Image (cartoon, rainbow, N blue to C red; front, side, top):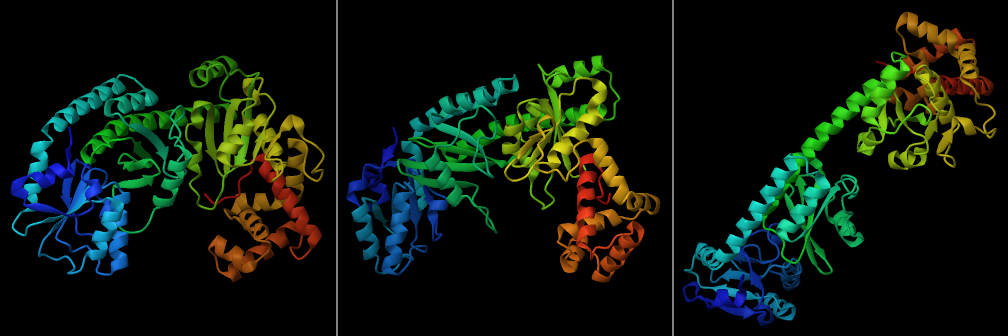
Length: 498
């Protein structure tokens, strides 16, 4: 059974006495540690005794009160101050606040080394150490089962039982479950994490403590997967060493899952490329599809497409676990999916992207046509209709092509000469045109985005006008250019420099 603050004071050789906070004498003592920082709560937590020479204690009365309040809120068992050392002469405000909060403040004689306090706690907590070792053995037995294919949800459940705490494995970006079937954070805990785990510059503590209405929680990033955060709650939280054993065990399983996920993404991307390049006949296609997506047939499979953001956002994080229900391939600025029809709305929400979807694939040779249908449907999406299927195209955008053939004619009629010029001379005039129009014909913004001098942009625009026979000073010609560029997107034509 853990020692109490009262038991610590009663040890004669420690020559310690209570200054204030008698109501907290029954606090359990798990460990004692020296910390002279202004905020020791980053390094100590529930059941720890803060030992200090007084160097970190503020001098102002209001600051002393706030200092003690932080310690009490973090669940620290008590505070031990070395007498006649570096504490402010007047700590009456600290003592009064500690008395009001029931937070024990202990004075220890000058000649008593803090190491003696730590040894006394170790001797008294031997029985607790035996229990800890038993829990550690269980943790590594769970790790052995994980290697044999236990699975992440089952591993997390076993580890919870091993250490008698609640464990959550979440994404650091949004604090959502890192993998399907994992428990979600309670709303109050998610809010606390969001407020205190924002990334900041400089060195950050590995383990963070989060105050809750009914106690506290610990959080620590997995070394093998920085985006993965382990959160622990419970009546008696694990110590720093046990936390690192947990992250080591979970990190191995997370790395295994990441490697498997990357393998599935690569193989799925290769299969989707073979389909789009018409390299497969029906029988081998169905065989490989059955390996990746059991239950998917050519009659219920569709191809969907979305435009990838070019703002530098880490959109790859949104693809997490998408490979379990779809084949995924990034091709230029397009994200291409092959999946079961009916999942489009869920994918759009998960990816936070507008999505166009083809008609059913039906046969192995229809891959390129299905992709063109998906891109055509994508061109008809907008803020109020984030998902559009080819079979459901309406007439709310009659100025856009309705079929791949119409898109091809619109593109060739307006931009065909520019496209042929780029191909023959290795230039990127079409890309320049697209950026210039996307930036609303702003010379400054377009030049910055293209990383060229303004005069270079002026020269390119004049070449575009000369080759196409149209003027970017004409509203009619600008509209014609824009709709033709939309047709190029429908066809999957990329203008991006390689």
